[in-house]
Image (cartoon, rainbow, N blue to C red; front, side):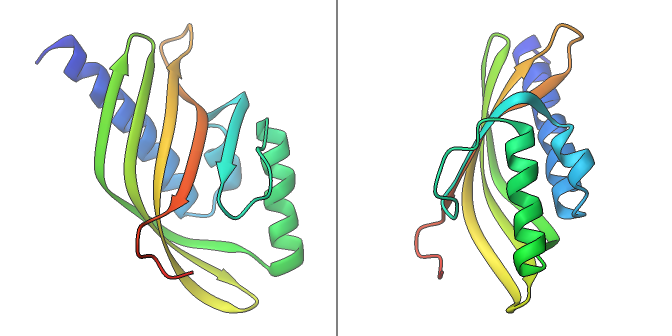
Amino acid sequence: MSERTDVAGEVREAAAALVAAFGRNDLEEYLACFREDATFLFHGTDRLLTSREEYRSEWDSWVREDDFRVLGCRTSGTRVQVLGDTAVLTHAVRTTVATRAGREELWERETIVFCRDPSGRWLAVHEHLSPAPGAAG
Protein backbone atom coordinates (compact mmCIF):
# COMPACT_ATOMS: atom_id res chain seq x y z
CA MET A 1 0.00 0.00 0.00
CA SER A 2 1.44 3.39 -0.92
CA GLU A 3 2.02 6.17 1.58
CA ARG A 4 -0.59 8.24 -0.25
CA THR A 5 -3.18 5.47 0.25
CA ASP A 6 -2.21 5.12 3.93
CA VAL A 7 -2.71 8.86 4.41
CA ALA A 8 -6.09 8.74 2.68
CA GLY A 9 -7.05 5.93 5.07
CA GLU A 10 -6.03 8.06 8.05
CA VAL A 11 -8.22 10.90 6.76
CA ARG A 12 -11.12 8.50 6.23
CA GLU A 13 -10.72 7.30 9.83
CA ALA A 14 -10.71 10.89 11.12
CA ALA A 15 -13.86 11.60 9.10
CA ALA A 16 -15.52 8.39 10.33
CA ALA A 17 -14.90 9.44 13.94
CA LEU A 18 -16.32 12.90 13.22
CA VAL A 19 -19.45 11.49 11.52
CA ALA A 20 -19.97 8.87 14.25
CA ALA A 21 -19.85 11.50 17.01
CA PHE A 22 -22.23 13.73 15.04
CA GLY A 23 -24.58 10.81 14.45
CA ARG A 24 -24.66 10.08 18.21
CA ASN A 25 -25.48 13.75 18.89
CA ASP A 26 -22.22 13.89 20.91
CA LEU A 27 -21.38 17.56 20.49
CA GLU A 28 -18.22 17.45 22.61
CA GLU A 29 -16.68 14.53 20.73
CA TYR A 30 -17.82 15.94 17.39
CA LEU A 31 -16.30 19.38 17.99
CA ALA A 32 -13.07 17.77 19.24
CA CYS A 33 -12.56 16.57 15.65
CA PHE A 34 -12.07 20.21 14.56
CA ARG A 35 -9.33 22.75 15.17
CA GLU A 36 -10.42 25.63 17.39
CA ASP A 37 -10.18 28.04 14.43
CA ALA A 38 -12.14 25.82 12.03
CA THR A 39 -14.78 27.42 9.83
CA PHE A 40 -18.26 26.12 9.04
CA LEU A 41 -20.52 27.00 6.12
CA PHE A 42 -24.03 25.55 6.23
CA HIS A 43 -26.90 26.22 3.82
CA GLY A 44 -29.29 26.66 6.76
CA THR A 45 -27.13 29.25 8.51
CA ASP A 46 -27.02 32.87 7.38
CA ARG A 47 -23.27 33.36 7.87
CA LEU A 48 -19.88 31.70 8.00
CA LEU A 49 -19.17 30.36 11.49
CA THR A 50 -15.53 31.20 12.17
CA SER A 51 -14.63 28.97 15.13
CA ARG A 52 -15.62 25.87 17.07
CA GLU A 53 -17.02 28.09 19.80
CA GLU A 54 -19.16 30.05 17.36
CA TYR A 55 -20.52 26.74 16.02
CA ARG A 56 -21.15 25.51 19.58
CA SER A 57 -23.12 28.69 20.27
CA GLU A 58 -25.15 28.22 17.07
CA TRP A 59 -25.82 24.54 17.94
CA ASP A 60 -26.89 25.54 21.46
CA SER A 61 -29.37 28.04 19.96
CA TRP A 62 -30.83 25.28 17.72
CA VAL A 63 -31.33 23.11 20.80
CA ARG A 64 -32.77 25.94 22.89
CA GLU A 65 -35.07 27.32 20.18
CA ASP A 66 -36.14 24.12 18.40
CA ASP A 67 -35.13 21.15 20.59
CA PHE A 68 -32.70 20.11 17.83
CA ARG A 69 -31.19 16.59 18.07
CA VAL A 70 -29.26 14.42 15.65
CA LEU A 71 -30.69 10.91 15.60
CA GLY A 72 -28.31 9.37 13.08
CA CYS A 73 -25.94 10.05 10.20
CA ARG A 74 -24.69 7.94 7.30
CA THR A 75 -22.34 8.82 4.48
CA SER A 76 -21.57 7.37 1.09
CA GLY A 77 -19.47 8.10 -1.97
CA THR A 78 -16.47 9.26 0.04
CA ARG A 79 -13.54 10.66 -1.92
CA VAL A 80 -10.27 11.86 -0.40
CA GLN A 81 -7.72 14.11 -2.08
CA VAL A 82 -4.41 14.26 -0.20
CA LEU A 83 -2.35 17.42 -0.68
CA GLY A 84 0.62 17.03 1.65
CA ASP A 85 -0.52 17.82 5.18
CA THR A 86 -3.93 18.90 3.90
CA ALA A 87 -6.72 16.68 2.61
CA VAL A 88 -10.12 17.35 1.10
CA LEU A 89 -12.87 14.82 1.79
CA THR A 90 -16.18 14.88 -0.05
CA HIS A 91 -19.18 12.63 0.48
CA ALA A 92 -22.95 12.39 0.46
CA VAL A 93 -24.58 12.71 3.87
CA ARG A 94 -27.95 11.39 5.05
CA THR A 95 -28.83 12.75 8.48
CA THR A 96 -31.89 12.10 10.60
CA VAL A 97 -32.74 14.96 12.95
CA ALA A 98 -35.55 15.72 15.36
CA THR A 99 -36.96 19.12 16.23
CA ARG A 100 -40.20 20.34 17.75
CA ALA A 101 -41.68 20.00 14.25
CA GLY A 102 -40.86 16.28 14.20
CA ARG A 103 -38.41 13.95 12.56
CA GLU A 104 -36.70 14.86 9.27
CA GLU A 105 -34.28 13.22 6.83
CA LEU A 106 -31.68 15.58 5.39
CA TRP A 107 -29.88 14.69 2.15
CA GLU A 108 -26.77 16.79 1.71
CA ARG A 109 -23.34 16.94 0.12
CA GLU A 110 -20.40 17.78 2.31
CA THR A 111 -16.82 18.87 1.93
CA ILE A 112 -14.49 18.65 4.92
CA VAL A 113 -10.95 20.01 4.74
CA PHE A 114 -8.50 18.33 7.12
CA CYS A 115 -4.98 19.25 8.13
CA ARG A 116 -2.44 17.16 9.97
CA ASP A 117 -1.38 18.71 13.27
CA PRO A 118 2.20 18.43 14.60
CA SER A 119 1.28 15.24 16.52
CA GLY A 120 0.14 13.60 13.27
CA ARG A 121 -3.57 13.78 14.05
CA TRP A 122 -5.91 14.83 11.25
CA LEU A 123 -8.26 17.61 12.37
CA ALA A 124 -10.99 19.26 10.35
CA VAL A 125 -10.38 22.93 9.53
CA HIS A 126 -13.43 23.59 7.34
CA GLU A 127 -16.84 21.98 6.87
CA HIS A 128 -19.26 22.95 4.10
CA LEU A 129 -22.73 21.43 3.65
CA SER A 130 -25.10 21.96 0.74
CA PRO A 131 -28.41 20.33 -0.13
CA ALA A 132 -28.07 17.32 -2.41
CA PRO A 133 -29.53 17.90 -5.88
CA GLY A 134 -33.20 17.04 -5.85
CA ALA A 135 -33.32 16.98 -2.03
CA ALA A 136 -36.62 18.13 -0.59
CA GLY A 137 -36.43 20.98 1.82
